[in-house]
Length: 247
Ligand SMILES: Nc1ncnc2c1ncn2[C@@H]1O[C@H](COP(=O)(O)OP(=O)(O)OP(=O)(O)O)[C@@H](O)[C@H]1O
Image (cartoon, rainbow, N blue to C red; front, side, top):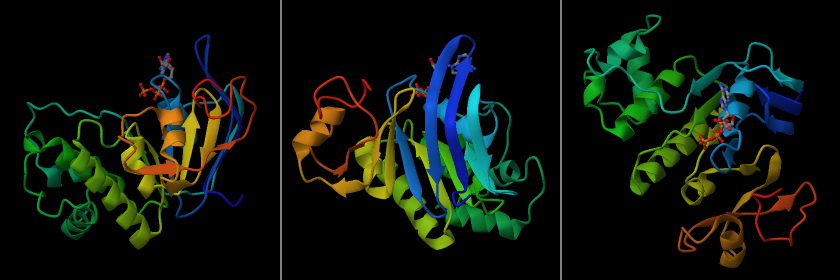
């Protein structure tokens, strides 16, 4: 296999509910892929299936042997009543050297946070510490589930710039889920729109036709930022360009 992780015909049920249907997916070394889609469209489920935390009902997920993977789950919270410094948090569950701690914090843009209490961190600082933790095993792929939830737009943009810089320096692939499509697009090589199945996917581009962007994702961005080239991989029953969520 040429990809780091590949899925073929991935179908997954939670109880009776089929959450993913016939999803084909592959991510190449160094590639940044963003998964977007409405709430409940199966984005987190896809990520968890790709890392092996959920077993497909049908189809197959293949990971490169001995793949080094860094995963940041959605909405991780810590018990705020338990005092713990950032350095201590990075040492759980296994000990790492002070030099490695300093390096990953630096790489995550959190170089000055080692001595701070986890409970005192802002949302953006907390996410960077989680990112630092995911970097500890020098991952070949970073998988981040909605890493900028709760951050304001400059905070989101700054986080994604950090991700892109990391990829450029370390060469790791990045797979992330985001709702901030307009912010994340410029930092993505490929965007996958998921709605139980892959509705559409393509390369991000600078906005050429704001109408098309609005037709796909609404008008929330004031037509401001980027667009991805929309390549249908299946037939829709509605007019082309009407929406990409109904497929
Ligand atoms: N452990 C579970 N048991 C039963 N149903 C589940 C479980 N996890 C997720 N689901 C259901 O599967 C569907 C997809 O959930 P998932 O979390 O993958 O969606 P999502 O696209 O990540 O959503 P969001 O954007 O809201 O985070 C939802 O209907 C959800 O209720």
